[in-house]
View 1 (cartoon, rainbow, N blue to C red):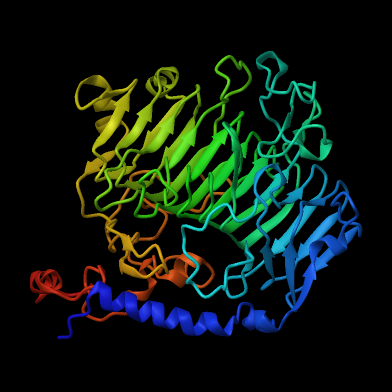
View 2 (cartoon, rainbow, N blue to C red; view 1 turned 45 degrees about the horizontal axis):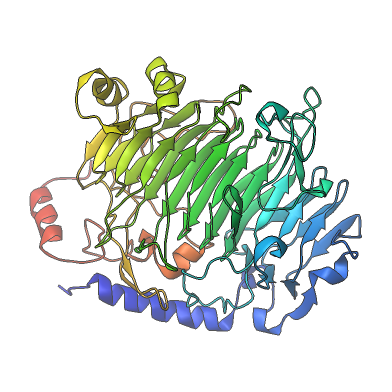
Length: 519
């Protein structure tokens, strides 16, 4: 039997990627021309001198290659339509002038891609062939969507001194003095059903900007976005700050991918109360603190960075996440779930691997967790050195640990559910050991099902992927193009444990099952 090592598999993947990438055939299934033959259009030619799109409805078509070389705004009352297969390349401009696409309150974006024809926003230096290093971050600003749903921003804690209105804040990463940078609505006039449009099959690559402490542009920044907005199948990769950050709002989102980002993967605060399902995150293999730094916490959850805020708490609900921290020679220092600043909410049926701590509870959240206002249930913490950490103390016994394990159904294991080992060349993204985030069929069981409420899918398993099935990242993500998920190994006969190598471990599984049946 042929011994197909992970290294050989990686070489095959890189070769195949290079061939398809050279053709730049993004969107070919939708009739889009090769990217190299598209007509170049600068988005600034569609806007006025202040960056506002001028047409009531602007449509970006995939026969053009669009260049973002400034801040472009979708103003109140106007629409931006983005066809499947469209590519927007963004020029680099650091600091407060970082280029970004901003959907203001009352504006709408309709970026409705498809699995075979995703919409891509990336650096102008990205050849789109998978070779642009995942360490290239901060090459443009990011996508910012602002709405009129609820937040807990209040003058009482100096959160809105720049706006002077309770419930209206200045979004991180943008300068004051411009009302297009505001989000939320005065108290009593919020619209929790606010609709900012659709993001579907969208990949945001190599963006982000750090302007100062608590002042960054994330891959996808959502300020008071309402639940009328549709967000599903969205990827953020190689962002200089958080992948997804929710500042208040009620928006729901599903099938989110976060890869190689420099900070948190999901960050909520300021009273966020939406729902998330199917979230996949993978930190890179390096965290030296230098230019190649990759990742921080899996989830960083709070109600407001200002501890004096007495507004409503964040109460987000998450089902079916898989977040993998860095592995290898770098000692993990991050938390799978960092719960702080009096957050509430729920996390269920999720898998976290490779973190220093599993659930890390700050002192002002511990009481909420003990009382059930903040819940973490039926999750698996694999290779997490300290599964439960409370008020800075590792907790391995007593009433709190009993609640964490026996009562709430969380499991701490050393290994075995998923393959979280990982190695990659940070020069050209060549994989020498890739993860397998998909549990084997029949594993990752849970006793809890998501609510039947019109949003959640009834996935009765732990993690972002159905055990034994093809991952939903296939076909549209950079993650799949690089081969960092299991899809490439799924068709390898003989690889019974699906770790990318056919060896004695697979033979042992075969011997154990020999003579059985499939009924």
